[in-house]
Each structure stands twice: as C-alpha cells, then as structure tokens.
Amino acid sequence: MHVSNSLHRTVTVLVVAGLMAQGPVGWLVSARAQDRPDTFASPSRVPTEMPTSKGAFLGYRTAVTIAVEQHPFLKKSQETSWSAQASAEQAKARYYPQIDAYAIQTGGTIRPLSGFNIAGAQNKPTSYVQNAGLRADQLIYDFGQTGHTVLAERANHEATEKDLLTNKALVILRVQQAYLHCLRMTRLIQIAEATVRERGILRDQIKVMYEQQLKSKLDLDFISVELKTSEVQFIQAKNELRAAFAQLNHAMGVRGPEDYTLEEVAAVPTPTATLESLIQHGLEDRPELMGSSNRIRAADEHYRAARALNFPTISATGMTGVIHFSDAPTNQYAGAHDGFTQLWWGAAAVVSVPLFTGFLIENRVAGALQQKYKEEQRKLDLANKVALEITDSYFGLQTAQQQIKVAEKEVESARSALTLAKERYRLALSSIVEVTTATTELLSAEVRLAEARYAVQANGMAVAYAIGKGYREF
Image 1 (tube, rainbow, N blue to C red):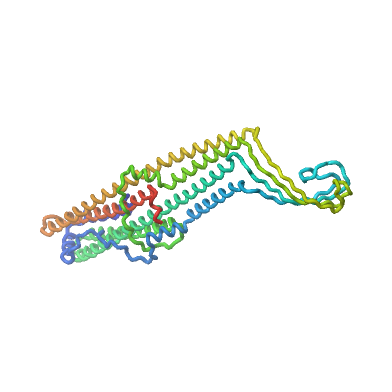
Image 2: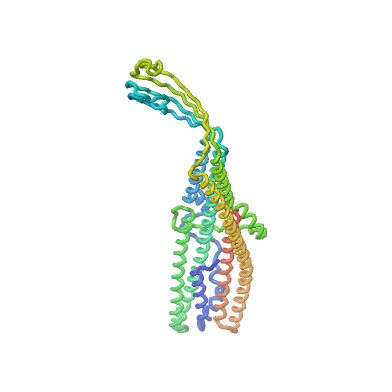
C-alpha cells in the first residue's frame, strides 16, 4: 500500500528539522537525555492502542453487519431476485387450466354470431338474449415450449441470487477497506500528534537558550515555523480522518456520526495454498461465475424453447353456461319462447400447427442462440478477470509480508544506530546531526513497518474476496 501524502509530509518535516538542528541544540537534546532516557526515541513510538475519541464505538463486525442489513444496494439486489422469482412462477402458469367467466347481453333483429354460441345471421323479429357461463383452456402438450421456458426462468432467478451474493461480497470488501483506512488515518494522527509534541518541547528549550543568548533568533524562528507546519499537518490529518469516517458511513450505506471509536482488526489468516490452487478455488466459488453459469443455462433453455415453436401445440377447451331469451317469438329458436332458459356445454380439442410466421420463429431461434454464445464469452472474460484479481491480490500479499520482514529488520537496525549515535554524542565524537538523523531514520522505519502491516491486512481481505470466501462468514 502507498503511504499517504500527509505521512510523507510529516516524515519530511522531521528529516529537515533533524538536519538543521546544530550547535546549542545538541546541548539541549543532551540535557534532555539526562532527565529522560527516551528523549532520542522516535516521536512515532506512541502507544499502539486507539486514542480516546468522542465518537461512538463501532466494532469491525458490527460495521460489516450494518452494511449487509441496511445497504440500499443490497436491498435493491434482493428486490431484483424476488422479481425474478415471480417471473419464474409466471412461466409455470401455462401448466394450469385457464378459466374465464363471461356474461353477454344481446339484442336486435339478427341472431347473435357464433362467437355468442348461437349460430345464424338471418333477419328475425327483435329479441333479447342473456348468456353467461365459464370457459376453461388446458394445455396438453407443446413439445417443450413451456418446460424449457420454466427452466430458463428458474435459471435466471438463480442467477439473480448469485448477483445478490456478488454484491454482498463487494459491499463487505468496501466496508473492510474503509474500516482499515480509518485505522490507518488514526495511526497517522498519532504520528502527527507526537511530532507536534516533540517540536513543541524542542521549541521551548530553544527559546530558553535564546533568552540565555546561547541560541540565535534564526534557530528559534526556524523551529517555530516547523512547529506551525506540524500543527497544520496535524489538523489536516484530523480532517482526513473525518473524511475517512464519511467514506466508512457511505460504505455501510448509512448516514452515521462524523467520527467513531474503532477497534483493531484481527490478523487475516494467510492462505497456505499455491496460486494455482487459489485460482481454481476462485473459479469454482466466485458467485459472479456461478451466476454466469446460470445465465448460460437460461440462454440454452430459451434456445430450446424457441426451437419448440416449430412444433404443434395441443390443447383442450371446454365451455358451459346458461342462455335466457326475452321477447322471443314462439318457435323462433327451435322451441324457444319468451322467458325460455336453457343450460348448455361444449368441449373441443385444438391442434395448432405453425405453417408460416413471417420468419418470426427462425429469428427467435437465431437470437436465442446468439444470446447463449454471448453469455459463454462473458463467462470466459469474467473468469480471466477473476484469475487476474486473485493473482494481483496474492502477489500483493506476498510483497506486503516480505516488506514486514524487511521493515522489522530496518527498525531493529535503526534502533541500534540511534543507540550508537547517542553514545557517540555523549562522548563528543559526533554532532547532534547524527543523532537527529538516526532518530528520523527510526521514525521512517517504523512508519514503513506500520504501512506494511496495513498492507498485509488489506491484501489478505482482497485475497479472501477474490477467491469467493470473504463474504461467507457474514
């Protein structure tokens, strides 16, 4: 991970201050060493626990849980999944009878058409007919049109469920990154605060020496400027932390407080498997790829359903009802008379064979086949991206782990060098520049160590996300 600009500026100020500290300042630092043995220690060596904050406590798992339960992005994905489930149930409707009720009132000098269940169209005396009944249609066989459509909609529903898991994993990763970023910014504030404190002590001592005419006005003005610069950087770091908290609220999908008290995140288990094994796990467990497989299956079922349109459809129809005549002349309708009422029923089998549809079926088949090819290529491209994500995060984790080892050695070496510089200065074998330079080197080493440890956490979470495991514990 990269060191932030504010951290670079803090280290730069310490380097400049160390190189410029000469002459009477050496006596001041030496005098401080007599009272406080740790005077020459790096200002960044502050307590590792989180500083006291006025913000509400927000645990790591609590932050992730809030995001999983309340993030609008996940709620939208859930609604999309439910909508796909409803579409799958709609496709099954053709398996069941379709029953309609109707009521018809006719009147005039002609007989109602056969659509009203009474044949004939010759002129007749004025009559009124009321007709009411039920009609039922039942699909018997359609050579797989309905079956393949149902399977396609089920596959689409499963794909939306995988999309929900994909979005959940992404939201969790963003919360993890935002939480770690807040912890890192809090650490930078600790460093900046320690820098201000050390610069303030040094400024006060130089002021005393200036009043005793042991220090020039130029030295006092210089350290005063450095102190003001450190204070500005401290304020900037605090504002950046507030911005980081705002990013954390956004990652959780809520409008939360402006600051929190956070907890340290437990170390992420380091994967012991090889890169090839991790890639294989990712290709099997990433929800995006599982959803892509569902979409390929849905496209294949749509293609099969489109091909089945070339075959006949067999269905059955049944109707029953009651007919009532008003103002009908006697014998007009084979014995019907005014007030005549009669029950009736009918049943039929229907075979529908598509002969020519204006190339509708042919183009539907071609479109479904192309959609299947597109989904296959989309999955292949997605698999390549997943493999790249796993590779990048894996080597990022390896690099960060190696950086920790190097940084730990650098810290140890810098501490030894500082101890040697203190002894040489005590024996008047070197100037204060050597001590301040060694102090700055120790600070830089500790900063690099802290950044490497953060990078291990971040890349470990990235690896868990890349192989499709990071979201499973939430």
